[in-house]
Length: 239
Image 1 (tube, rainbow, N blue to C red):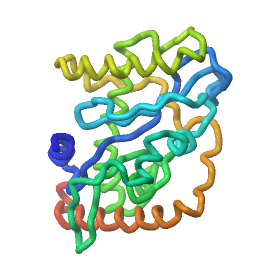
Image 2 (cartoon, helix red, strand yellow):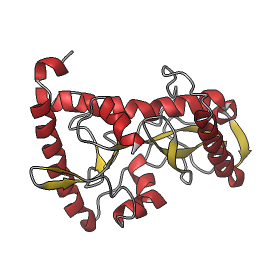
Image 3 (cartoon, rainbow, N blue to C red):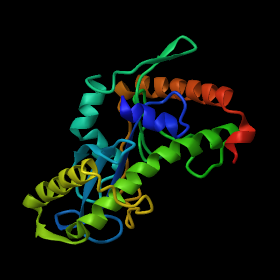
Image 4 (spheres, rainbow, N blue to C red):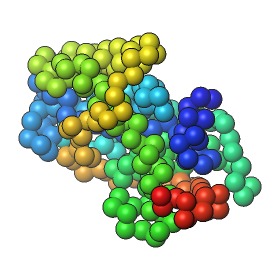
């Protein structure tokens, strides 16, 4: 699987990663106001190492927290039902590790979604080095959104009715993918100038059915950390 090898080549050992992040700030006339005090609608996107959007969801006003938007998406339903990201499977210490989606600290940790140990590098040296590698993967989604908004300027001020906004935004992501596949990659230095930063609402509490998945997510992250440190001397990772 190409995305698997692309991320391995970045030094993210033993992880097949489809990078996931929500970036808000696509201005529309809508019945929701995000915490930056302008009307917006959230665009949730998942991309691979080549910045191709693998999944998008546009259905929530800007005031909704990223985690809430994710839990309300079809992507979440498929992940919970184990319909996607089931292979390749790698064994570490006798435990099967399946592909992960990587998110920032706004997202819930669970068996299919990996996030850093700490948001501000306040963990142990090993955890901080591990988190640094995760963030190298997350840069791809930030770059993808930066290219998207730079290429399709209409997304900076989408002055249309809310009933048509989602269709226009999704169309732009499809056109983005066509450009990427045609070799028009965009610049690696382009980043979303107006990230959503978790949205404005509360993330919502994990329901009881998520507790087991969260516990398994912690176990798997710890396994990945131990494997990562074993395979990469700390003196090399700090450079």
